[in-house]
Image (cartoon, rainbow, N blue to C red):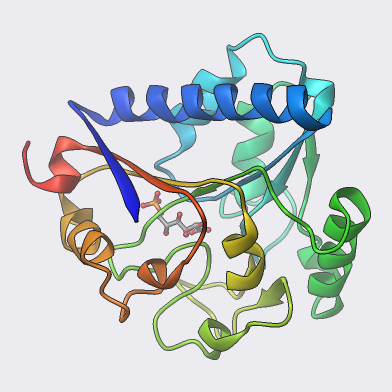
Length: 224
Ligand code: 6PG
């Protein structure tokens, strides 16, 4: 079941996303001493990251992971890490996906997650975006990765929008305590409708985490 929250515009939705991250990490720190959060790429979350960076947080008690990363050079504008580093404060502890390590990089990242979170790794919060084709993370329609239910981190089978991607997979995402999508814009409306309808042809709709929230602006749900 996905809880839907609709906002009047993209910045209100982004602010709500930042607030959800703040409240979730503070509770995780109270309960377990450290908060483990995975953040997606794409452009939609940039205002959310900027809002989050303004908040007074115990940054040293939060570890940020990447949900996915494109296979391109360090510092490239196409790298999701480039935008995370630009938006979050320098005190933020970010565990970058080691795309430079090639295929073995996925195993390296899975081992790092297990080292920091224990086995099996359980993230406190996962932020996801939604593509127009219903992809989420870098789980894209038609990729055999959609049937990966053993490894927590893997490489996409082919290039997608110009790059191969390393991505968290359903086993790890489904174990998260809370997943939220931040989706804005009229172009995402069909994917949002399919996600809410549970259309399993959409990779996003195949997620089965305990608690899922969709933060959307009115254009993405067709009321704006
Ligand atoms: C990526 C993302 C991807 C993204 C969606 C939405 O690396 O591309 O993780 O899953 O969240 O494609 O992207 P936009 O927010 O740019 O529309």
